[in-house]
Length: 200
Image 1 (tube, helix red, strand yellow):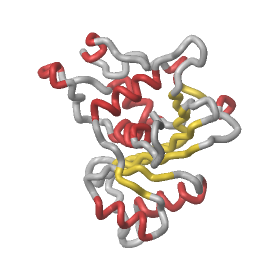
Image 2: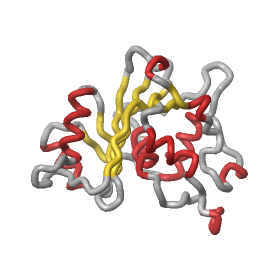
Image 3: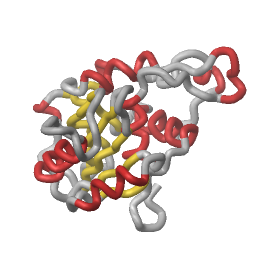
Image 4: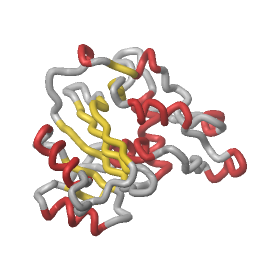
């Protein structure tokens, strides 16, 4: 496991992120995934986000798709597309995927479940989630990084290098809460353990 040094907590959160190493194209993707997850960060006035990640046979995680939108209702919007609509589309495309959602809105979870979306409350611990993402980003000599992002995920790729720690309270190890919706969804997807022991 990669443990970031204290210096890594000053300024940029994911200081090892390198587009040359972590960004991939269609040709780089594995033929199949043994697991697919969708992380969901709710939003309305601020953007909400859905991040699709797949785990291959070597336990490398691939971010393959994102949906980031503002002013989208969950399940009723007078003819406008809703988060339930987006979730249905992703569920059809990735039928085995589990939707791991920000637990702050249990009513939204019920809306997903009511239409057959396999949604559950995510583990939303910030420090543990950031540490896991940093660990997966760390490139090992044998396998390279265990987290890779498709270049079409432009919102996530824009957020990663700009995600920073609060400089006025470094000891608290809290990131600045700004433009982090895709990153929050990624954290929910990766940190939440499935219902089996010893996963991480």
